[in-house]
Length: 196
Image 1 (cartoon, rainbow, N blue to C red):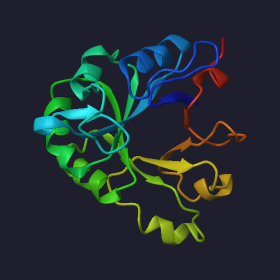
Image 2 (image 1 turned 45 degrees about the horizontal axis):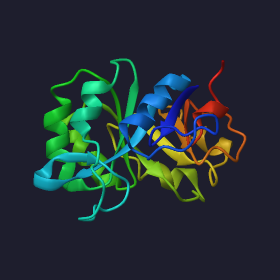
Image 3 (image 1 turned 45 degrees about the vertical axis):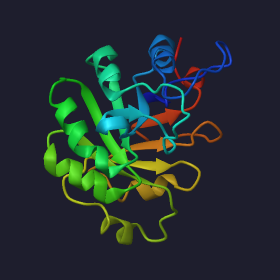
Image 4 (image 1 turned 120 degrees about the vertical axis):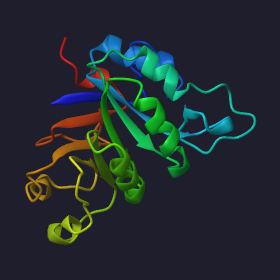
């Protein structure tokens, strides 16, 4: 199972770092994570930056997607969550310059679909944050070309993922739950899952 640091990594052993910062990404790598999840949105002049919430004028300096791509080892999985669909053209331009290991996701499923049309060779998938009553109804929402589904661990039951054997399954919100049957997890505390 792959272990990704949610917005980097924080560990009780090393203290809290700013999320989506280069220091948090380095900590995830140092702790033995297989990659990180980070949020991508358009910053000033359309430059893709790494920030979960909408950008305010008084925000501290934000790490850019280009900084992350310059830093990341080639085999370190970069789960790039699209927070703002306007960032897609600039993401595509940057990602075409770097041969990295990518997974592109979003709660905005149409944004992932749009990205996938631009870069069909990159692994993509929706983030599912609602409890599917009928797995077959959910199947109708998963668009062709996707390779992954990212589930909210607090609402999905492991038998639901069995309805989707053709996808890789990741889970977030995992730190308070027993995690079984997933190909990867996205954790706020990587140190809980990496083996020494």
